[in-house]
Image (cartoon, rainbow, N blue to C red):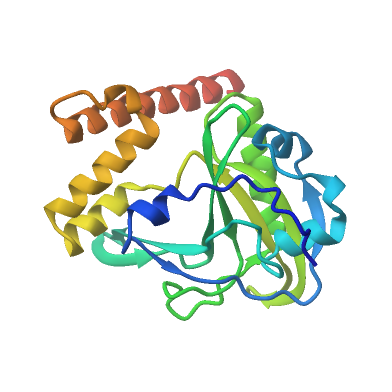
Length: 248
């Protein structure tokens, strides 16, 4: 069941600009989705429909049962290091990027499913998430936000009605995450390993325009991006340390 009018202000720049950095994919269809927790305040912040849409509509949208109006689900590809070895081909094994929503204040945010089923990057795994794990992430991400430590946010946890095996049976769920973007260091590593310099420069320009537009005028854009990322990362680590010391 879906509403007749699209209430989601999607503007999916990544799929427009970065062709080849993802694979279009669809979430697995759940058997009996049920909203366990929904973040009304975050939905209002993002300008998204809340409980007025109806529990069944939200459960359908935020579980993968029904298409979210305006979304373009994709599994992102990236590279990285595992067990001390560089792996040139990784990707979202149990996550799907639904797209980017524009909040009422004009800021852009990614919406992503976690636990919505296998993707081309799952390497034989089921791509699912336990309800307990989804709730833990919801609580921890919102706690970090309340402490004013930058982190991903959690919009909802929806139980799928399925059972999955993690050494013992568990109920499954889909977590909807919110982030400024899901660009990674590994996104650049994948571009360098598979696409070459032109793709890395394209990705750097996109990241700079999306996250640090005030530095687009600089002659050396890759260096400007690295400098900006180092600065925000240092601030993030400082907040982690300040919080840890205050609770120690």
